[in-house]
Image 1: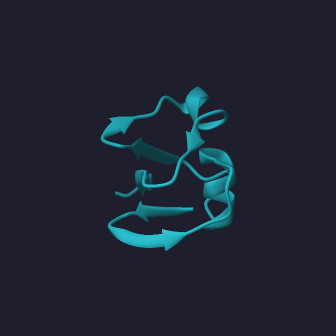
Image 2: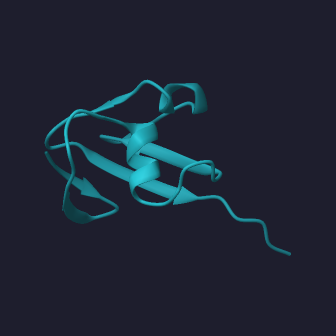
Length: 66
């Protein structure tokens, strides 16, 4: 399956959930905001949202600063 992840074309195994995609890119368990095809996902949707061929995924890691 081919997707665009943070502006970069990438290939992943299908089927894939957003949660498993986060694990594949090393962000499992980290505070993130995920947008799928220009729609922000609620945290509870990350568990079950399915990533499909051609999707555009944006992941922003939340960090604290001072």
